Image 1 (cartoon, rainbow, N blue to C red):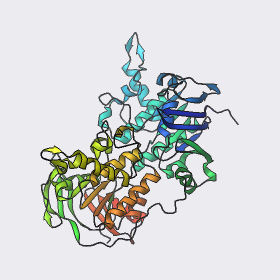
Image 2 (image 1 turned 60 degrees about the vertical axis):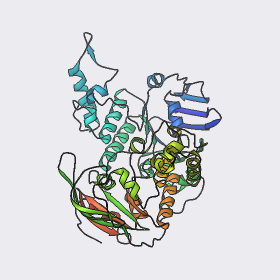
Image 3 (image 1 turned 180 degrees about the horizontal axis):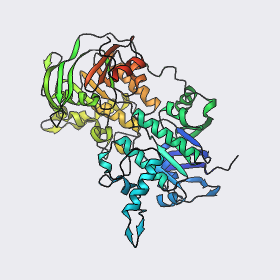
Image 4 (image 1 turned 45 degrees about the vertical axis):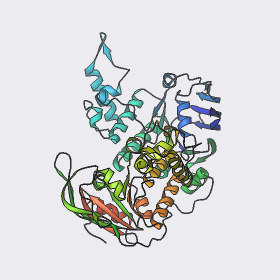
Amino acid sequence: MPEPILQTRRIVKRFGGVVALKNVSFDLYPGEVHAICGENGAGKSTLIKLLSGIHPAGSYEGEVLVDGNVANFKSIKDAERAGIAVIYQELALVGEMSVAENLFLGAERRRFGLIDWDVIFSQAKKLLDRFQIHIDPAAKVNTLGIGRQQLVEIAKAVGKDSRILILDEPTAALTEQEVKILLDIIRDLRRRRIACVYISHKLDEVFAIADRITVLRDGESIVTLQTEETTPGDVIRHMVGREITELFPRRASHPAGPLLSVKNLSVADDAGEKFLDDISFEVRAGEVVGIGGLMGAGRTELLMHLFGAWGKRIAGRVTLDGRDISGNSPTQSIRQGLVLVSEDRKRYGLILPKTIGFNLSLSTLNRLMRLGLIDKENEFARNRDLFASLRVKAPSLETIVAQLSGGNQQKIVLGKALMTEPKVIFLDEPTRGIDVGAKLEVYELVNRLTESGKAVVLVSSELPELLGMSDRIIMLHEGKVGGEFTAAEATQESLLAAAMGQVRSVA
């Protein structure tokens, strides 16, 4: 058995009186893919920052060892010199620069004191070709989708001759094909004896790629498991500290009359080209209607248009509770009982430097006014009740949102939407990037909403989630309805066929 290339021994990390990591120990071997799993807030991000030198030696107790020697990293540069590279969810690429420039940024090849662009572009192409990443080295990074930017980031890390690669939720924004490419790249790195720490909420990927799995819970390393000797159910049980028998706890619904009606809707994009074509469906009170489709099918655009935030109506009619809402703005939509929870919570859903209380009441300030001023007492009471009902893991309403885990940030976005007292709630990828426990809380919230007579439109890229939480499912294909299914009729195969345009009408 070879010696570990990386080890942590009894790591303890405190932030004031809060213990973020306690007694965390794990090891990583050359050529191993070692997954770290845990709920949001379990300590994964803190551990990454410690291994990468962001939290320097001396700011924590315990030891980090590289090749058996204690590593006293004082900065990110120290960790990089030891061969450790980290790819974060928030990518560190310069959008205005080319792919080649990004790949060798800070390590430019020079000749006679000048940058040798021919060598840089030639080596960039070789590096991309080595991992079958078909991207033009001359392309500007900001012209690439998030998935392709992620692949550039990985190539950049490997190009630095890193021996240890830490990937933080690397597939959160990737298409199915890009995920396949990424997993193939990691398998190739394994063959080259490069060790990988793989952090992900997606257990299907973890079980497809990892050799071992270490579970963190409440800042503590609970167990390390051989992947081939365990099951996803066992990992989930260790993550949440209890047995979970049902991943999608959708309770039987009893839909009433239509709340939202969409008839023959066609919408043009900003360039004037038709993007959504002849879409019709209804959403009834007490019902969850799932909307799926491949990347670019028009799922997010449909929700954004119905909310009044995107596109130009070419044809069709939309009514909410019998009232026409054609031409609505987001403000009008909220007033009439329609609210959208965006897929990008950090960009569109939250003001990260502000407090929980500030964010919760942001969409309903007009309802909190009294004699031209905000009724602070009423605001606090409403925020306090919602904070408690959502079970947000934070010290108080004064906690800064940026300090929360992804799952708790998502609860704040949902809470802000619920503050508007909507009739119909659009949820666009509401469980993206959050852990199993937080997902269950979102699903329970969906159940409570429909049981109270509200309607939910759920957009998801995860077919099991659509199948498990929807009463009816509409699959989009290239801006059109590719198929509509009842929950009883739908299968993953039939949904995928509809998303690919092979089924026009099923329900």
